Amino acid sequence: MTVGGWITMTLSLVLVWFGSFWCFWRVLTTKEEEKAPPGFGP
Image (cartoon, rainbow, N blue to C red; front, side, top):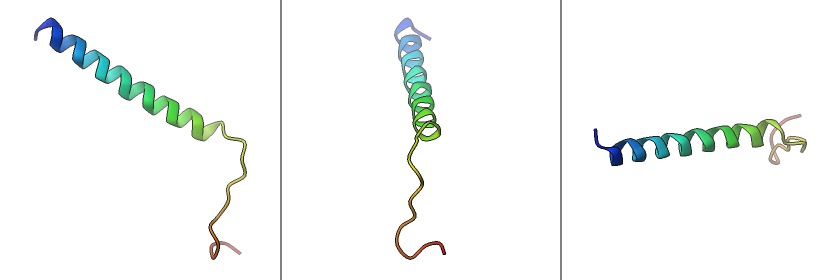
């Protein structure tokens, strides 16, 4: 594989990993109470 291929592959993997970890961090550290839409729940 060429150097350009390695750079492209590495950048794409880093972006996907960063996006995944950022989304998990945002979901797991939110302080808001979960709100169900009307008509759901007791």
